[in-house]
Length: 65
Length: 399
Image (cartoon, rainbow over the protein chains, first blue to last red):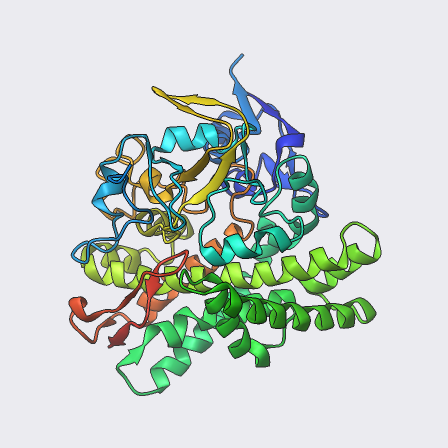
């Protein structure tokens, strides 16, 4: 799984950091998401899929190589 | 168009948690008539809302002619409201939102969890020490968000009665514009004074943080004051309603309440239970509103540039394509993709804070008071239906 994060779209709702905290964090000064791991291990895939699904700005895209 | 249904629609008294049947039966996109006689579109399905709420052909700029205002009062004040996260589109919205996100970040809010737990334990201690029956709205529902938000903003708790009253006036459907202006003005004047104090002597709170941004030229003084009042008002009655209505819904579904009680030490279960209650109750029942700036084709309909569009959140949250058997409260169902906080760039700023408040209340209240019960017949519980969000006037409980 490859994760792409479209930062300019991010509205910092923080849902990704909540459901997949090992893959997403939030920047301290404005809450914008930080992609910690663009190729997360398999045990993270379900959470990452959920993060992409709940992102209100549709800023997370997943591709499977 | 005399048969165009009026919106918002009235819920059925026999089934008060579900949206009106007219919403569940509505076409994916149809016309409704609102308070000023205009006929915006109503969009009810989950998938359509996901597509359109991120579509740049729709604007939240309430100053545009034809915008489907929520109330007469909102229409009257719209031209006088400065640019805020609630009335601007990207990229201006993105800039403004990034100046206010920080205090509501997941990690900042998680850090407050012990403090929120103490607030709630304290309120339950007081409730158990006093006489019963007691009104849960006054004992727990309203004080929880008041205590938490005033603490986060840095507003002294001594002023909480003033804020609750101003908030109730500001969000009621029936408020007339002459009446609304003074309460909003008083709140603004108060926050302006407090902000000046925080700029002079910053503390560890949100108003001080906004003060620093004003000093740095990242936002204006007026923007900071308006955001401050918006944060106070938005977080108040909504969380209070979710606490009291959630309790009532659980008391009506004893097997779900029992499940929650027995698993209240499982944070994942509790978190999902809160999402399901957010979905099931969808307290914001007057829709979220936009105006089309270009023509949009949706199913067999064309929404024209200049048309108002209302997104009915409960429609999406009771869409069987997204949530099978939606009228069933099921704390184990995957519920996180609900639209109770809206969807798109304007999704609720305070959602992470609301989640922690609700998780702490739902995992604490029923565990600590396992015999909690209604003190009146269900039919006598009085709902408050007139606001932007619905709630309860009171919830008499005993144990």
